[in-house]
Image (cartoon, rainbow, N blue to C red; front, top):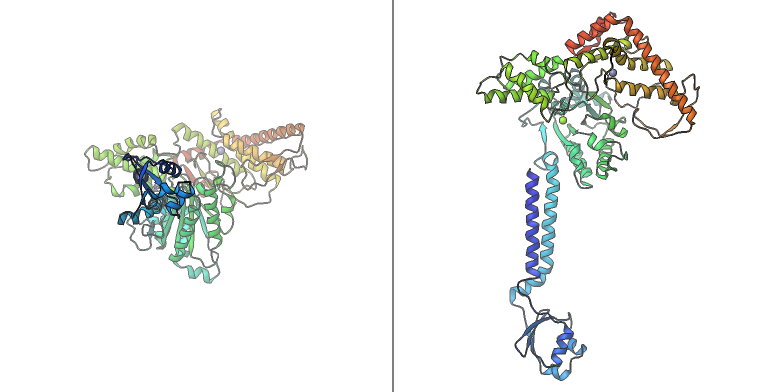
Length: 609
Ligand code: ADP
Ligand code: MG
Ligand code: ZN
C-alpha cells in the first residue's frame, strides 16, 4: 500500500516536471513568427525590414509594415558579418538599424543557465525518487546501516523479545540450537580448544512451523544482535543492489561482533543456479554468489553465525550446503498433538481462556502448523469479543477451527478421521517392515503428521554424503518403501494416492540399482546411460541414452520385477505381524508421533537388541 501511494506521488512529480519544462522552453501560448537567416537576408535586400534587435542569441526583427519576427543569430560571429556572408547587399545593410540590447539583468543570467540546470534538476529528482523507491523496498527489513535496521535483541529494546520459552515443542531443534547459543555466549571457550563452530545453520520445515521464531529466539537467548533479511526481498531489486545489500548485512554484523545473520526464505535466492527457473535470474545469482563469498570469508575466530530458513531444501543450490556453509541442518516438523496443546497454551497466555480444554482443541487440529494455531487463538478471541464476552469458551475456539481451515493463509494439509487411519497404517507399515529387516537402521520416529505435502516418518534431505552401499541395502530400502503400500492393501483392500511418492522413489532406487550401479543379475555388471553429475537424487538429471530400445525394455522389466518382489516381501512381513501393525496404527492415531523407545516397546523389541 505504502509503496503504491509513493509511486503515485513520484509519477505526479515527474508529470509536473515535464509540463514545467514545456512551459519554459516551448512556451506554446505565445507563438512567434520564426524566420531563417537567409529569409532575413532576402527581406533585408528587398528593403522590407526596418530594424533588427540583437538580444543575446535572438534576433528580433521589425518590418517596415509593423510586422514582427524572430530569428537566431549565428553563434560567435558578428551579425553583419554573417549577413554579408549570406549575401546581403552591403548598401542595404548600412540603411538597416541594428540594435544591441542586453537581455534584462536576471533573465540574462538565468536563461542560458536554465538550459542546463532545469534538465539536470529534473534528472536529479527522477533519480532521487527511483533511488528512494529502490531502497524503500528493502529498507523496512534490510537497511542495516541506517537507524531503521531490523535488529532485535542485544539491547533488550525489542519489545517482543522471544526466548526458547515462547517456542513450544521443537525439542530436538532447540537442543541443537542450544549449542549455537552457548557458542555465542562464550566463544572463547570453544575457540581456545580449537573447536570448529557451525557457521551456517539451515532451518528446514513447512511454513508456519516456527523457523523465523526460533532464529529470533536464538539471538535473544544468546543476547546478541539479530540481523535479518528475506530472500524474496532480493529478487525485486535492481541488479547489483542485492549483492551490495548482502555485503552490508555481513559487514554490519561483523562490526557488531557476536551476532546472528538470518536469511529467511533462502530458497528464493538459493535455487540451483542456471537451472532455468524463469530463464535464470541475474540478480538472484549475484546475490547468491555474494552470500557464498561472504560465508567463505569468515575467519576461524569469527563470531557471526548465519542462520537461514527454507521450506524447499530440495531446490537449494548444492554450493550452499557444502562444508563451511550451511552444513548444519535442523528439521522442524509440524507439531504433534502434545506440541499443538503447548503452542495453543503459549498463545492463550494473553487471552482469558480458563474454560478452554486445550487438549480437545489439539485433538481436533491435526496438521495445523504453529502459525495456524496462533491464528486460531486470535480468531477465537475476536469471536468472543464480538459476542461481548470477557473469556473465550470452548465453543468459540472450536467454531474458529473452520475459519482457520478455510482461511487464505493455511498451506498445510489437514487429515480427516479416515485419512488419519489410513496414514497410520501406511506409516506403521513402513516402520514395521523396516524394523523387521535384519540390519536396518533403528526407527527413530514414526509420525502421521505430514511434512509439507508428504506423510512420512523420514524427511529426505539433500545430502552430499556418499555411503558405500551394498545391493542388500538397496533391496531393503525398496522393501521399506513398499511397506506403506503393502499395509494399505492388506488392511483396506484398497489403495489411495498416498503411496505415489513412495512408488516413484522406489522406481528411482530400482533404476539406480540397475543402471548406475550395475547390480542387476539379469542385466549384468554394466552401467547404462551417461548422467550429468547431479547432487540430489530425484532431480531430473539429463541423461544421454547409450543403450538400445531392447535394453531399455529389459531395464523396465527388471524394475518391475524388483518392485514386485519387494512388495511381496513387505506384504509377507506385515501379514505375519498384523496384530503388531494394528497396535502401532492405533497408537499413532492417538498420539500421532512415536519416538524410538515407544515404538520398540510396541513391537516387542528390547533395547540394545
Ligand atoms: P516459519 O518461519 O516457519 O514460516 P514463523 O516462525 O514465522 O514460521 O511462525 C509464525 C508464527 O506462528 C510465530 O510468530 C508464532 O506465533 C507461531 N508459532 C509457530 N511455531 C510455533 C511454536 N513452535 N511455538 C509457538 N508459536 C509458534
Ligand atoms: Mg518465516
Ligand atoms: Zn509412504
